[in-house]
Image 1 (tube, rainbow, N blue to C red):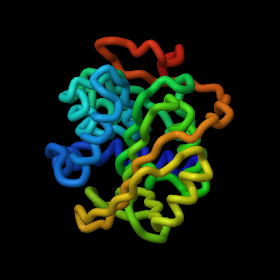
Image 2 (cartoon, rainbow, N blue to C red; image 1 turned 180 degrees about the vertical axis):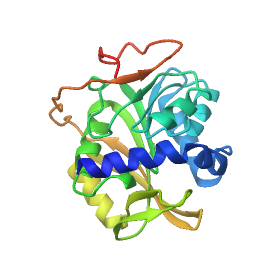
Image 3 (cartoon, rainbow, N blue to C red; image 1 turned 90 degrees about the vertical axis):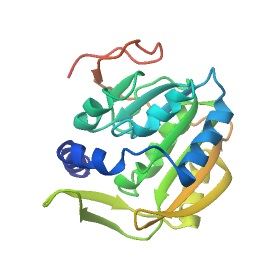
Length: 234
């Protein structure tokens, strides 16, 4: 299992410039509509966690709306690029071990991120997203529609990334089983792929907090979020 994360991390570290060139245009279409829904829900005083923030494109949009955003990603290369685009906190983390206290974010945004981990570990990631959300919070999740789990080459020759694609009912059950009520389901087509989106709110009570030992590698920030765990540089 660790090999999946390491290989994906290495791939994203190496493709970061090409990835940014192809994907860093402003949000539009379905993603823009979803982002506005999250902004409306959390309000100007709200705090969002961008899970799998990549090069910072989506995080920059939320900041442009006056929202406080914290981004996390497994790829140091992606975070280094994002540091040039955004002002908020950035941290290198595995989405299955989110190093923030419970109930500290008003919203969670996870775009094209959950699809990069094996299906057997996806419930743990969803439990972590639920754990760090306030009871009044909202999760917006975007994944690719499909069936298979596979390694696929893109962006650079020899650089393969892991993909797990889902059917609607499959993800509905997974969200429900891991502490979320689904408010809205959407579908769209972009970049030659079919996409599914889920707007969710936490069910009560919260799942038992995930306990773990973690060292964070943090990236320089203008202002340190008060809800980040103390850490040691990696």
